Length: 151
Image (tube, rainbow, N blue to C red; front, side):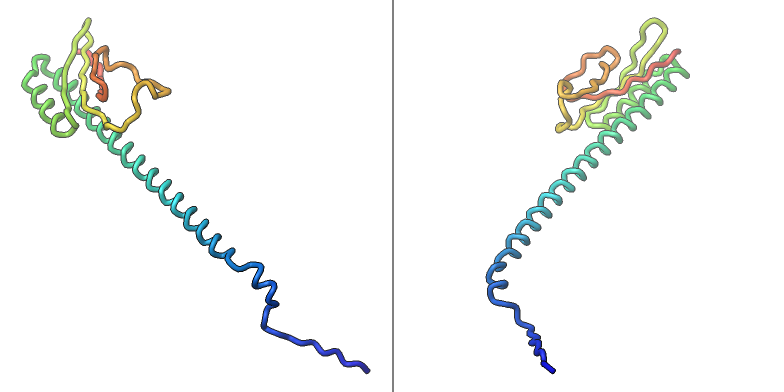
């Protein structure tokens, strides 16, 4: 009968260890770079979301003000004092907010204008360009809401 002796050892052969030294350092550096790029992308997405939320809040406030001005003008056509009050409210709620009422051919329009965010894309860069603000020539960087109503 022959005996087979199997030697079990916990040591790895030296050539295996020598061939793979340093590869974990490169993997760690790549992982750190990947995490940094991902974190920057997430921060940019959060900033864009916050900017869009602020712009949407401004449009919402302007819509409420335009609706209130239209209701005031429908109830009392000579409501100049109320328009001044809403203009003052627009100035406090919106950056450089202003309210005006325009009448043409029996149809009136309540217009609320404000200064848009500075880092918004230029009008020439937009694919879906918004219509002019009720025929008004607004300075660059301004936004508006127009609400038509009949008196």
